[in-house]
Length: 186
Picture 1: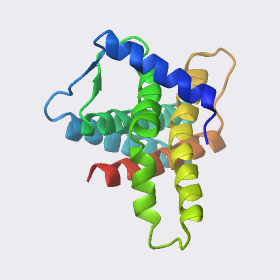
Picture 2: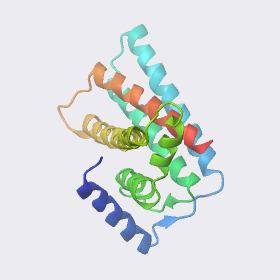
Picture 3: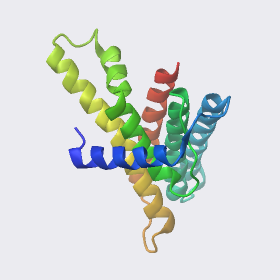
Picture 4: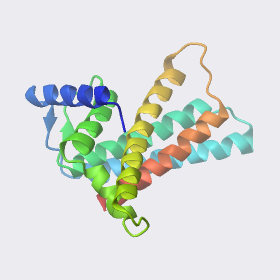
């Protein structure tokens, strides 16, 4: 499970934003709009991966960026599905991460409940089921956090060059993340 310190930090940040009026109702159509942006970002990342092979391009940083944005847009869609949107422009990426933790791990545990439902038939004992759902929930949140850090590092840090293996990992992680969000939303 994510460290209690991280959980408390995320919850405190989101509670502060709530009191400041920074969590609002999403605009009508947000769920579909951001899921489509998510799908398009995955398509772009996938096509860039193909172009690397076909044309000999070095597009690893852009694959990482497009993969991350597919996850970011899916997370915004997931928040919209729960009736929430973040009304901040500065720091929106990290706030989205904190909002995922606050709303889907701490407040009402929707992700864990979702993963429990998805694996009920496959797992016999309740303890195994809880462990599996906790691990999946943590992987889901960590994947978003990892891609946030990677996108920032390979986009803004001088001397940091993206590697093909990291781009491939980003794309696979993003596809899995977006697929899970689409299941939750539908």
